[in-house]
Length: 308
Image 1 (cartoon, rainbow, N blue to C red):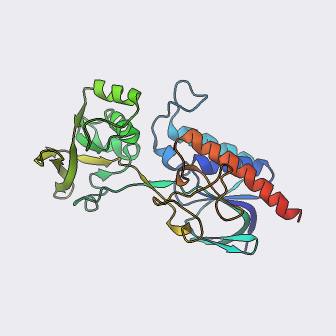
Image 2 (image 1 turned 30 degrees about the horizontal axis):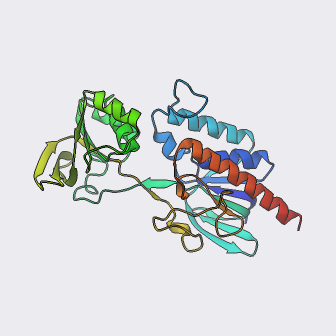
Image 3 (image 1 turned 45 degrees about the horizontal axis):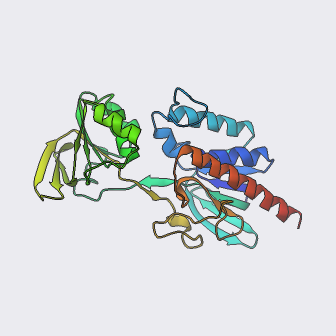
């Protein structure tokens, strides 16, 4: 069974930053990622508020640079799916789809997954008009009509991105005002391709072999309205990817991992960073900050164990 000083579970900005700091501190470091390096950030077309990029930077580009920097310090990156975390004396056992590894410290950076709306037709048409990532699938709707469900930053950002391709973008929100930041709202209101449908919720998604229409209900009048679209993008928030560790790691009611300011969880030597952690702001900049803090904390913990 291979041993590492630090194992990082998740390859988004938080995990990559943790990897950079850990490997640079001469910790033998393994980063495990089941899919795309960069996580949610890698699916973001444009990041405008990351310091050092006054003209903005593409999410994939930024994550690629982070990965390149991590590899510079000889971090071991493997494509495997995390299955379980257990504690054996002072060692942590990390089980993946390809084996089990030992570590003195573990940094949890699994992020969060997009929430599902839970309406009829959502599962049936997933991949056939229902999507959770505009950056991934926007190109397929060139010259077509699409709908974005949600009213926060993510929803408005998705809608604005989709205007690059779609002929028309409907934004459906259950309230009478958006929750997105003012600058995003102003961009949406001034974009002629975007039409906001207020006080409405999606009741069902219909079509034959693909999405053809969406049936909505006005929450105030209870009247139904049908809009013909070719695609529906869900942007109603995220669910932390914490199911595999809830048995031993403390989380809040929503499943977000509870940590202190040094990213420590209730288990000594186990840390949590990024979108999986309970905190007030989930952005790339806070994710990399979490990763740096956790890596420094983990490095100190590992050194203490070695000196015992």
